[in-house]
Structures are given as structure tokens and as C-alpha cells.
Image (cartoon, rainbow, N blue to C red; front, side, top):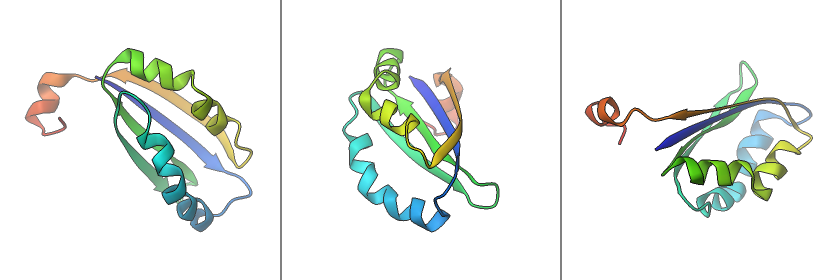
Length: 100
């Protein structure tokens, strides 16, 4: 399994406006092939938002990163200062700690 962590700041969009848009946006991510889950994250105090994505495999993660949906996210004018990092999940200890 693979994890992708995407973080960004908001510019010209309030916390409440962002949060209210997430329910409409969520089905687009739910349709991503190979995506097990996406955890939507928000810290209004630090103006940090994003997601923690769990993919079935590296291919699914790379397909998402090359997708029009990801391109649209990165091109959203209200989202700035992106940090995108991908990881391989260490499955054995993650099972012990109930992550999977």
C-alpha cells in the first residue's frame, strides 16, 4: 500500500467556505480507482489543509498523481504552497497498530 500526503494553504477562501465545499468534492475522490481512503485534514489556526490518501498500490497512487482530478486540484487558485509527499506503508507494524 502507498500513502500520499497533500498539504496546502488557502488564499482568498475562508475555512468555512473550504469546509462547505468538501461534501460536494468528496464523491470525485471516492471514484478514484485504487483509492482505499482519503482523510480530509484542516487546521484553521495554521491555514493548513489537504488530505492523507491510502492507495492499494504504487500504480494507483501514480495514476492519481497524473490524473485530471489531481491537475485540477493543483490548479485551484485558492490553494497555494502545495507540499506533496508519497510513502510506502509499512504493513506489518501498521497491522499491529490497527491502521489496516
